[in-house]
Amino acid sequence: MIPVISVVGYSNSGKTTLLVKIIKELKARGYKIATIKHHHRDFDIDVPGKDTWRHREAGADTVVLASPAKVAFIQQTQKELTLDEIIAKISGVDIIITEGYKKENKPKVEVFRSEVHTELISPRSQLLAVASDVSHTGVPTFGLDDAPGLVDFLINQLGLKK
Image 1: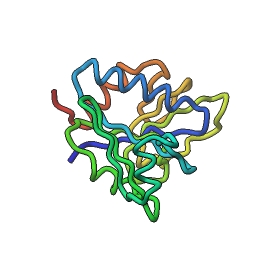
Image 2: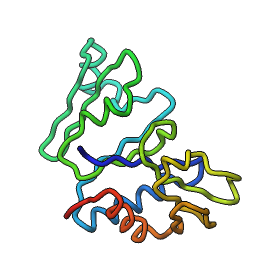
Image 3: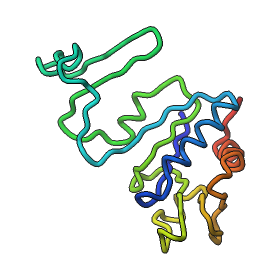
Image 4: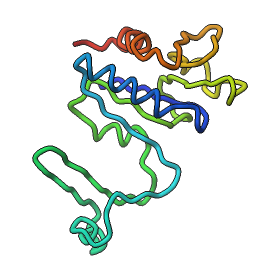
C-alpha cells in the first residue's frame, strides 16, 4: 500500500505553503508524489466550449484528456467519493499527501500558527507531527520552514525507501 498523510490545519494556516515545501523536498530526494486537495464546493477544470467540456455536456460520465506528458480524468459522481475511493485510483507513486481531509482517519501533519489558533484540531492519536511557530508537548514539532527536518521525520515514520 502507498503511505498516505494528510496536511491539515485551520483556514489560512499555511497548509498549501507547507505542502509545496514538502513536495519540493521529497522530489529533490527522488520520490514520486501524488497529492489530493479537498475542496468544499463544486469546481470545474473544463473550459466552456472546448472539446472535453463539449464531451461532458453531451453526457459523457468520464472524460479523459491525454497528451504525451499528462493525463487528466474528469469523472461525474452521484456523491462525493471517499478519500479511500480516490486513493484506490492512484498508482505509481511512493507517497500520497492530502491537503484537508481533517476528519479522515489518516496520519496527519497539522499546521499551527499561534496568532491564528488556540488549540490543535487533530486528535493526538492521528498526529504524526506539527509544523508550528510554537512547541507542542507530546508531538514532534517542526518549524514552519523546516521542510527538510519534517521530511526526514516522515521518511523514517512511514518507512519510505529510495
